[in-house]
Amino acid sequence: MSSTVTTKAPRNAAVQKAVHQHEAASKAGLLERAFTFAFRGLVYAQIWEDPVVDMEALAITPDSHIVTIASGGCNVLSYLTADPKAITAVDLNTAHVAYNKLKIAAVRHLPDYDALYRFFGAADSKANLAAYRQFLRPHLDEPTRRYWEGRDMVGRRRIGGFAKNIYKRGLLGNFIGTAHLLGKLYGIDLKEVLDAGSVEEQRRIFETRLAPVFDKKFVRWLIDQPASLFGLGIPPAQYEALAGDSPNGIRAVLKERLEKLACDFDVKDNYFAQQAFGRRYERGAGASLPPYLEPANYDAVKGRIDRVEMLHANFIEHLASLPAASRDRYILLDAQDWMTDELLTSLWSEITRTAKPGARVLFRTAAAPTLLPGRVPDAILDRWDYRAAESLDFTKRDRSSIYGGVHLYVLKG
Image 1 (cartoon, rainbow, N blue to C red):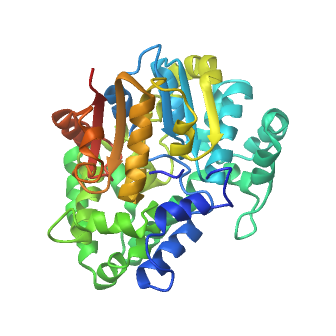
Image 2: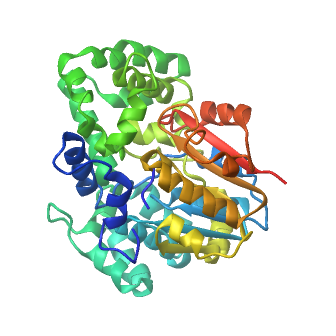
């Protein structure tokens, strides 16, 4: 899930350029503008792309320089466990920039692993507010301090989220909370999935408890509204692509994705399922966590944190500022689902220009197929090898389960 704000344009202008594809007075145009309004604040307290799959696909080496959209920042920090030379993270969302800078400061300056886990793993202790004042605030730039010490749209201080479970906040956190509330209206506690003793029991709970909800009249109506998925960070154009991924429409697609999340992986080994069904990470020895929060990775992440650069920038404009053949790993999340053919061509022109031989590009799509053929000129795509079989395997093993496709391209030569 992606968001990328440029320092050269007014706030949200670059997001508007990416999303607004219809006249403002049209129905589609109104939906696009409603989405960009919703997208202005924190969207993802946790990124929803599986970093374990990412690192395998990227085949990171000690001389790799990664350029990635930052989003919630979990994967930016998790890639450090693979020992790259450098990571440049860019994002168009000012809230995500502030969130990533807070995470970087936390790795650098919190006194130990327990303090880091309490801040971003549990994320629900008043001790985090004291830690912010003592260890983090002195090391933050003024825009980042202003963001976290400011108030959100309902008047809460943003830093207070770390005393009350930050994962319940943001656009996605509110969406998941609404799903839990909707479940309760139908007598269902989504946490039931996490209490299952086996994958077989997870499937039984899904088939008998969760799946029937998709047939409820109100739920059918709700899902058919494109605005209902804004909380997943899905703009109108991506909603259309998602709906087209099944002949039975958007409800069938969402049901299939939820089934994968609930049934295809042991929930005890899947922190994405824990966040979706429990709104938190499981605790205790051996709990499933993003790699940057795993105790065994703490020393590596802390020792390599200075390799991360966080930029408030547009991805294409950043690449345009770089020398030719200077980067070799690119992560686009699902940002291309938003793009026009013109933007896709500009993006891949800059990726190709800045890529070293053997460079790798990883991205996700709402629908299953890669979206590049026929939209990016053959003269550019012919320089890249699409790893179709590997991409299908990565898609199958992505524990977040919400994407139709995970796609890997490798530069020839």
